[in-house]
Image (tube, rainbow, N blue to C red; front, top):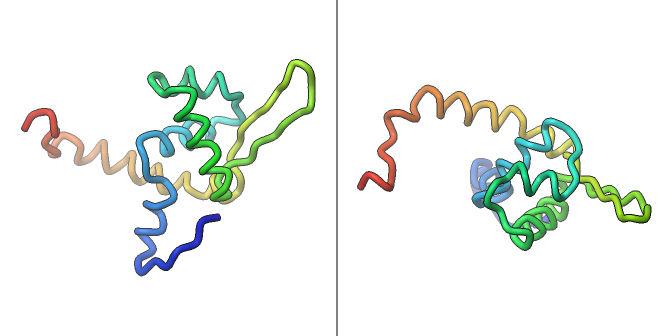
Length: 111
């Protein structure tokens, strides 16, 4: 897990889930373990390289577990660790906020 001096717990949370795809990866892994290709299909628009990089960072941060079954053909699954699962309430709160206040936010595209 990356350690740095942080002065605000919110900053800690944001540093772990920042980026375009990490929140959505967590969202899909909350449904259960997924293989790489299934995640890439779920995350319509993510490149192979970007997904691989995000998964490696999330594994290093302790959010996900990579399970290699050692089979031929290779079978690898990704799932949330207990730490990753603990973000469920954070994502739920973000979802609720978006439903309640999303229409009040001016889109960057509209500017």
